[in-house]
Image 1 (tube, rainbow, N blue to C red):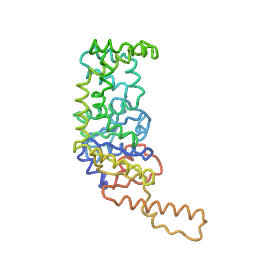
Image 2: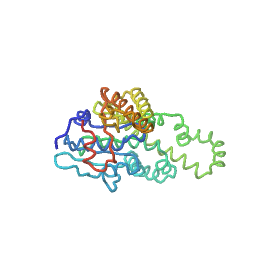
Image 3: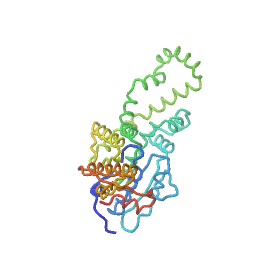
Image 4: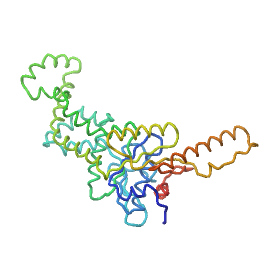
Length: 343
């Protein structure tokens, strides 16, 4: 099928990784799927779209009943392109990471059976940020895919994802980790810490305190591998083949959040390659003539729509900004996703 060339097409033809960022509620997941589907269909690429959100939004956009931790092939029509979708399972991913980075099987087994480890990997959102980027490196280097599109969490949490490698490096170099693991490293320190440990055992319970100490000691043994991995992630995030796409709508709230996000990306050395303004009204609406004979409440409502359309036009005329037309119904199939980004 012949399609118009959009601003996003040049990006989709060359990028290896696209991180899609933006405020919540602006259609970011749908447009992540749209970018990957168009890359496969229109550019013959082997594209994978990945979400860290356990909700069904990505599955719904692709017209899938469900999908899980392993990439699932999504039919995308004829041609050389292929499209996969994946939802990252955080618990399973952490387990694989520990098994890969542990110095031996005994260390891995001890860490995997530690209750604090299990709680952290299941319940703490910030532990998910690092995993999302760890997956990114593996997927981007995988011979099966030549484009990986990452659907990130909303604005602030997207920045947490990008900051995860630095936080991991800070943790392994922190006084806290040295202090928590010191009793394992020195008999003198164990003796000096004994009065504190007696009090802590009364407050927390001996077995629980021991598990905390064991967890940090075991986790510290993974330090060399984790530090090197974090640096690999940072290199991937800064690569000129890694691109950033900001999704927003034209309303004042999402626009302000998007502008703030762009500023924060710049602080981190990342320049957005494209801004997608979603749910844009048809240009013809700006030319509507409001008849004086219309009821006042209807005239006011139409005036607001015309003003919104005019404001959208001013925004989407900027360089590096692409309009995505408003759709009457949610997109729920690959063909609809591909058409979303027509110029």
